[in-house]
Image 1 (cartoon, rainbow, N blue to C red):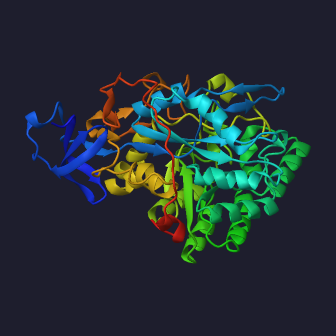
Image 2 (image 1 turned 120 degrees about the vertical axis):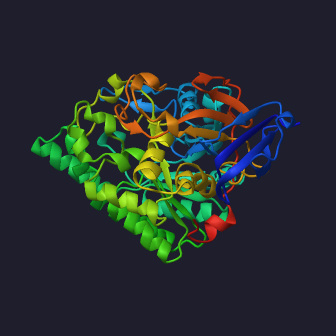
Length: 475
């Protein structure tokens, strides 16, 4: 007898959407058969999802939980922990998140990983994994440590090409060290995940605007501008062309110039992949002028309407592969504490509405197929970052991570219906569907608004980048 069977007429599988019974046993999908194949008495529970969309659980490949948030006075606060963010994620149909293990000077890579596990173990309702983050001047001993981390199931290494703000000096990795990291990661069959902005341009613009007295955060797009993205992307790609076997994943692409750089690199056969954020796809620099306009910001900045449209075009021609959040869950007071170009809080609150917002914008308003939508919010992240087909697929042998979206739940988002913070940048946004059921490894964790998860449910996911993804521009 199966533990659970979910029957639907729009079940999104790797072979396409159709009418299927999804049979679950021991936390895994054990069978996928034509709808009606399994009798009611063949399972401990049968869920009829006819008229709804049955899809693999969402994957957010870029979140920051219990993250350090520097304030202008020099103090540092931690943002909300995994227990808060993962609960909201499950309410919103996301079953896997990837955060970051930040290495700092004076520690080893393994110490950074161990510390991050202490922040997450038995404190997360959903499954999770970590990118390893390095910063600043890299000592020679770090390179064999990175090699060991990649071999041990931590195959993605985050690198900054900018300090981001003047107060965060020491974040940027210089291009000589980037070259060395690329060589190590390529040798160990991993992938580098890149925050790319040109530091000279960014810091020049900080100096220029401060000198001119134009310091309000509404000028953020002048500092973190499209030219900076273009220069940095192309310089990084220039190094990558000289490192056989390196694969890159560009985080939070925000500008048309970044999209075009990735597009050209992929056309030349390079294994390059692009991530954007749902706020970049939905908002522009004009939204900084709205009340509490800091709500819409993360680093790099929001850009122009032309840039926004280029991101959408990138999802169509497979230049942009994933839609993440850059989640930083904090209060409205903290989010709006900074009011200048050099002290505005980055990150955003969005892990809960991401799946529904993107379904509405992609399928509802732009006519994307359901399969394309699922690729962008789940399957592609799993494929690129070493989780597929365990995650991101409704197929036999995969983890039974399942989200059911109900198109009858068309609604206007209000912060009081969400579970993350005391504000939402998605307040007032109309969505065309809402998750009514979330299943994590066979366990129903959210059903019709009732939360059934446990902090012991979340498991760490060791990953390995596939040779297919590393060999060329797949997807």
